[in-house]
Length: 275
Image (tube, rainbow, N blue to C red; front, side, top):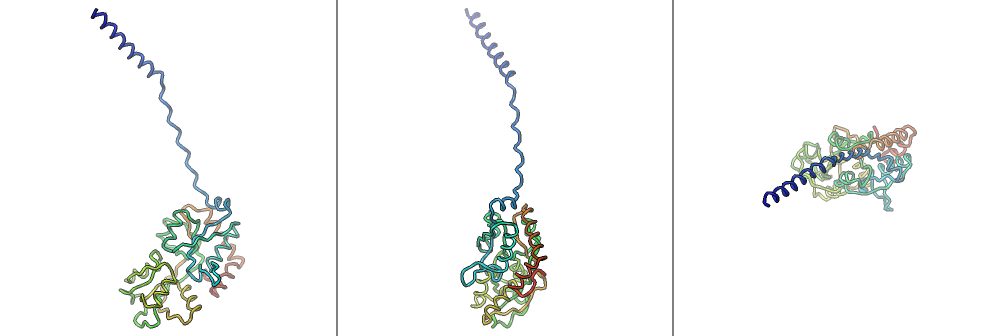
């Protein structure tokens, strides 16, 4: 009886093993899922045209490039130039005002498509961003209070308080010359601190300071030195915005050929500021 029971159990185990083997042989391994096709890089120009809007990051506090006039309307040299470019591309300009030190992050986060705010074209920025061709050439100036008689050159600002936006190339000049940086949100705040003697100096765009002194000749501010190196400024885009950059460059070329750029430049500065 024991032998018979053992034989039956053994037969059952062998049949089970054979069944597993047969099942395993019949089941073919599933083919790997095809790899998803690479996503095509976004063509920002096509996107902008499809939406009919160009989103533009700008300060709105940086006269005469981007600021509000007495009626509260956003205006300025950069505003007029980029508005004309948008018109030539065939889209509506939508301005999104942002403090300078938050502007690059806003572009990174795709809050806007381009920055129009006198952004200096520098190698470190070109590693991360695309730029249009230069549309202004400007010189940094060192400004002090009219009562200041000790600061006459950039080398004199070591240890002095300089009102600067933290991410500006103008701030780099202040640091290189040993100044203590006092962070500000923009040009107007820097000038206010200087006029009230809460800082000793500010290094800013020469065209902006000249425009300010033209508008307010009695302001207690004076220019004491000009930096030897001129800065080239361009419209800034996220990396990979090739088609939109090309459209901007074509519009700028056309504006310079047909006199539109010169008309805008002379309106604001009385000269061609692209050279």
